[in-house]
Length: 75
Image 1 (tube, rainbow, N blue to C red):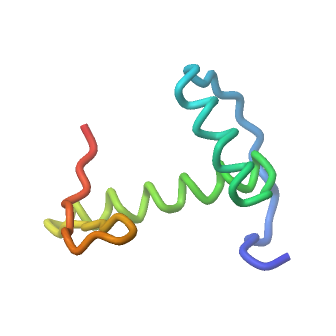
Image 2: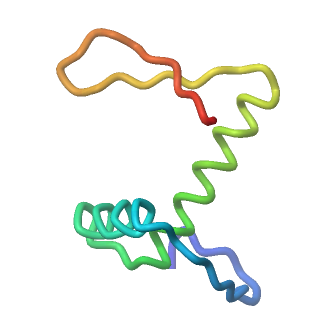
């Protein structure tokens, strides 16, 4: 399948806060992807964003129908 890397899979167990569990359910409903696919994609995006910020870069987002850019921050 596209996007999957060859090799063995690693099984992990995570405990989600209620807020994170709801966010996962929301994304599953939006994308119709499996929870596994959503979590995999989320980790890849998070690693990408963290690397950009670690290297001194910045990530900006723009909400629909807005001209304003906001700098993405993780606390």
